[in-house]
Image (cartoon, rainbow, N blue to C red; front, side, top):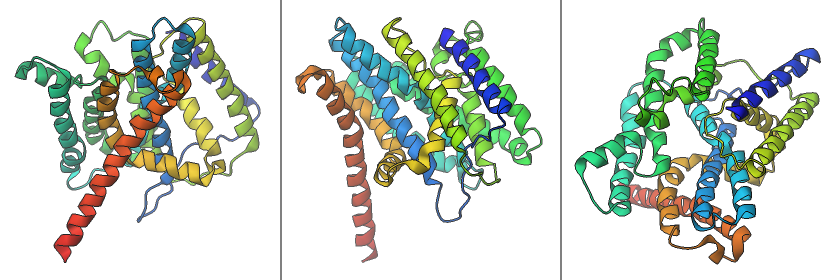
Length: 356
């Protein structure tokens, strides 16, 4: 709660600064093209996917070395820094959504089916006693592996988009819906809905992330072109972003606070900050992040298996905590990408064989 209130105060200060000095702020606007999708949002998804893995690595280190407070506080700091990940992932998932023929078939084929297969496999690997009732509960709530909660959450948002799309498409009530969604998100983060919702639903509650989804829809339906990047804007956002990182450092090291995924302000500040500097990124770095963003579903579904098996190996085994952290991160991102490349290569060879 303290972090949420600090974020709101920080956002108010930021808005006041931009308003006082009449500085234009560059908001994300997708470049509309028929043949390709906006790659900058894939870069954001790449950041988000790496961040999600970093959050889970903290739990892995904490499992083996809870008494090593210096290392744990540092992995906690990196985990807290990465708390922008799930909101950014939800936001970018909403940007390119469109209601068209085969909307639900596409969601079933590309999300529900892989999720179902990996849930069955994960339940078989992770648990010793099997019951259909337990599996169905875990499946619906995304509890086979902790990160799997994201799929039931996302499916609820796809349904919400199906309902809201006619209103959002018209554009007249779009800003009002965005404001209402922000208020709902803040109220949810402050815990006011907890007593009214079933405890099992808390982890997949759309109220925790609804603002980011509606913001993503708004961004996707924006047709105006972006103005030139203002250097004063970049400078001020840098100051506020560094201030956020200092606060995260304090919360992590002095208080040992494990921040939640669904705080409202920090992910928005991260989005604005990164967006200002995306054009300054090294081309190779952007390509790598974009590729990771494109392969995010493979990483998301497969990396819980990898880190689950890694719980039988002390991370310090990999040349100490620093290299152990780096090696764990590379494995949990790299192995799913390698599997994705093999599968895609196999599909290409199969299709080529059929054509010949």
